[in-house]
Structures are given as structure tokens and as C-alpha cells.
View 1 (cartoon, one colour):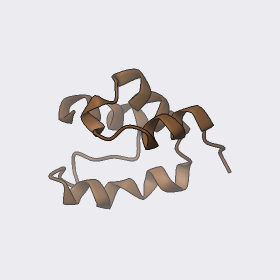
View 2: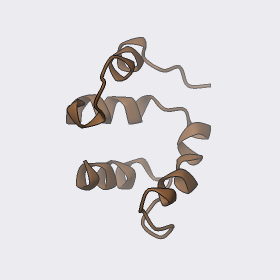
View 3: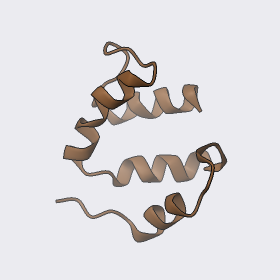
Length: 70
């Protein structure tokens, strides 16, 4: 199982507003996600306005989607 970086997890937990998380922190957090959790994001994101066709388990495409949404 992929271990998450304690720094990344801590910085995400300590941020009250997700819009205040800078791009580098978001990218690091996404890179630290284990594959199983990441794959589970697809149906969750669909609930927040991302159509099934636009959300993928490919990390680079997910980063692009995040950059456009945030």
C-alpha cells in the first residue's frame, strides 16, 4: 500500500478552506493518494458536477480537472 506523506496530509487537514490550498500542495496530495482511494474518486466527483466521461482514474487528467475546477 502506498504511504501518504505526513506533511501533505497535515497541510490538508489544517487548511479550513480548500480554495486556499495552493496548486503545489494539491498536486502533492493527489500524488500521495493510494491507487484504491484514487480509483474510488470517480463516482464521488460525478456528484459534484463532473460527468462520468470527464472524470478518469488517470492522475494527469485528474490534475487537469482539478486545475480547471479550483
